[in-house]
Image (cartoon, rainbow, N blue to C red; front, side):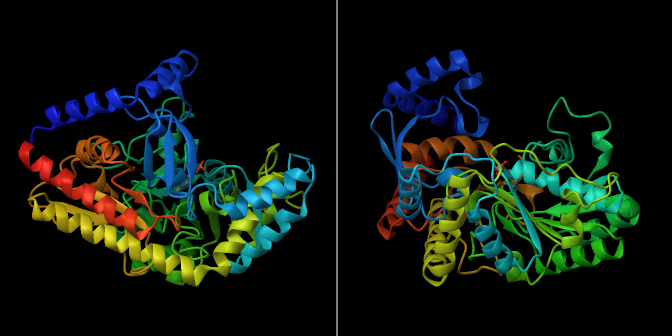
Length: 462
Ligand SMILES: Cc1ncc(COP(=O)(O)O)c(C=O)c1O
């Protein structure tokens, strides 16, 4: 396939149609590295700058409107700027309330109660990002067990914090490399990488390192690792092994929490971790994350813990910010009340997109498989990953495959398909993205029609 020509053509068209964004990008680049603060958002040749986001749509500085499947890093289950949250916040602000106070307000207690009830955990503490929360969860595990090693899966993204920056997407015969400079010396040997969904590898890693493993952290539904569900027997074995070796099991539910139903994906599996990390959806569009779990572990972040075991999971001027807590509470409550209406609908749209994309590309001779579905949420998965597979590959089961250029065509997925869909009026990420309650049937159908036009066009480049 002549990808070079295809990509060059798409970049040329994109530039022609995004003059204002290009100007804004150039201006922003004078003050910021690559014109922004989050590399993923700053895709090449330059990002479009949004001026308005509402429901399923985003309108950019050049007046172009896209149906958005990125939806705020997959956080927006209800679409952009849902009215229920805006109304609650506007009312709060009109009462001259809502800005930071430095006091423990009531909304956080109510949000704590709701989330803990949903996952049947003892205690919860809020902060502002998933990254901080996974770091605190790992620190709690280290303090609780008195051990040094953190085990994570290859392909698992837990934010950019020192204990998690290994084995994410840099593929060189496997996912087990450090992914950042500037890390503390010796960190490489403190992070053990195991293969997602591979029971044998997990058993071997526990045999080898078990006595030193403070925690095994994983996403029961892996996000950046390719939208793949854990197999139930794998999670069960993870639960058994962590118990056998007195390590803690941490579920990172930053993506999966409140995405497949109004709670953690852990209750679909019937497996209870020691700690759970939430983020994204629980903030209702505001910066909220949390660590929830066992009393005897969580207690280590309070003054009751002895000095040698106390974890500094504290500070954070904006932790449990009043407006964020109100947004989160309003959102989570709404998701719980409308659970039976929201999740089956977006799940069914997800299935339509996954099946449709596979059918279309296959009909035009492309080897494409979609990820995002699984036996545990067969009808309730609103997430769609599109994997352009090399010849003779017919199944995607591991993040290693998703990031292995010999298995998946990463350039097609991350660059070419992205720009091609933008040209058609759809904003996608990592192959496609997240369907929200704000997306309509006709937008979903239109996205499939766009995929068909793209597949037809690409066939000429084959
Ligand atoms: C599974 C997972 N954990 C943690 C994080 C980090 O969360 P945040 O970006 O809020 O710091 C992310 C972010 O995408 C994530 O997907």
